[in-house]
Amino acid sequence: MKIHLTKFPVGGLHLEGEEDRDILELEDPTVRPMSPVRYSLDVGLSEGGLFATGTLAVDLEQECVRCLQRFTQTVEVPDFATQVELGTSETVDLTQEIREDILLALPPHPHCDWNGANQCAGVLEIKRIHESEPPADLGEKNPWKTLDQLAKPKTD
Ligand SMILES: [Zn+2]
Image 1 (cartoon, rainbow, N blue to C red):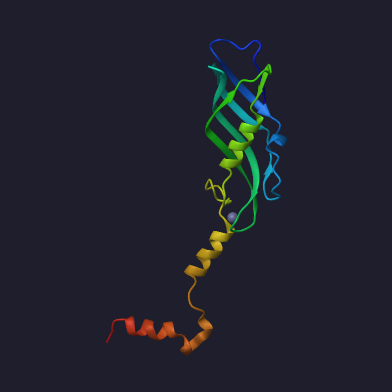
Image 2: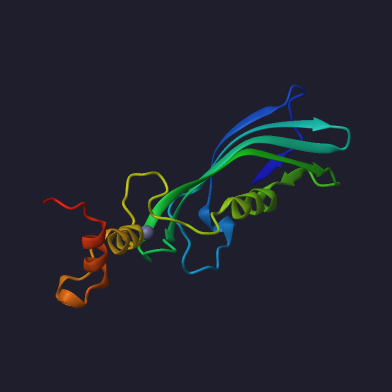
C-alpha cells in the first residue's frame, strides 16, 4: 500500500480501501484469506516521518483446533499504528506494516464457535462424554449403581 508524498495535504489524509489479499503472503495451509485486506487509516506527516493509525480487517478461512472444521472468521486490527521514516522516495509503502499487524492478530488457537453462531462439534463431543450416564450394560457390576443405592434415602 503506497502513499504518495508529493501532493500530501498539510492536514493529513484519511484513506479507506482494500489491498490485495496476496500481501499477507500466508504460507500456512490452514489459513486462507477470503477477502481483500480492508483498511481505514488516518495518515499524517511529522518530523521526518509518516504515521498512520486506524483499523485493518480481513476475512480468513481457518481450521478449528477442536473439530478441524473449516470456518470463516473476520480478523481485525482495531488499533493499527505505525510510523515510517521518510527516505528519498516520493512514496511510502505500508504493506509490510499492515501485513505484520494482521499476522499478529491471527488467533493462535482458532475455534469455529468464536462468535457463537456455530456449535463446535469438538465441544459437543466433550459435553456428551461429560453428561453421559454410565453404560447400562454393566448391570450389577456397575459400581455407580451400588453407590446410588447407598445414597438413596430409605423409603420404608
Ligand atoms: Zn470446532
